[in-house]
Image (cartoon, rainbow, N blue to C red; front, side, top):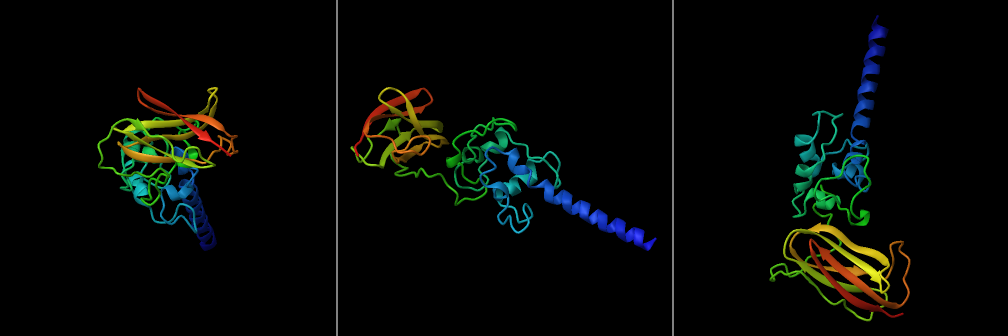
Length: 230
């Protein structure tokens, strides 16, 4: 009898540990682009056991308010509310950090946004590669001339938007063929700079020539030219 009880107790522990180990690692697939940071999306220290480290601010937000069941097997309820929050306090919403500013993504859909631009919604030090500058200056929809111009192989350009908006900057050949998408993010109103390294969407260097760069936000659109000279 004692042996049976002991065996049952051990089996119960194994089942519980297995359930706990499974419960959390499945959650990255329940947020957009969750595969980039995996368990680190929600946990400050995901190792040595995945999903068992202390939760970061995004993980705490989910645990408190955005699980369908409040236990280790609960599923993340991604949507407009969670996307609109700024869990880590870095002035960028969870949705903007994960490439889905409006919270429209659902499980099974292709990952939204640009994977390289995805940042960690639970880590305030994880920020976009596009820095903000001169934030107190008057704002208008504007696209500056790239500098240097001509350039080889890297150039920078500045732009500003007066309202919170999705911003897309695309590079085209003079024949209208898309070369790459430089920016595709939901950004707060402000002044920004972006850098192009002279490569296409496959990270292959492009040839010398004149290229168009197009800023689009809402109904606004500005087109300018730049010259790559090798």
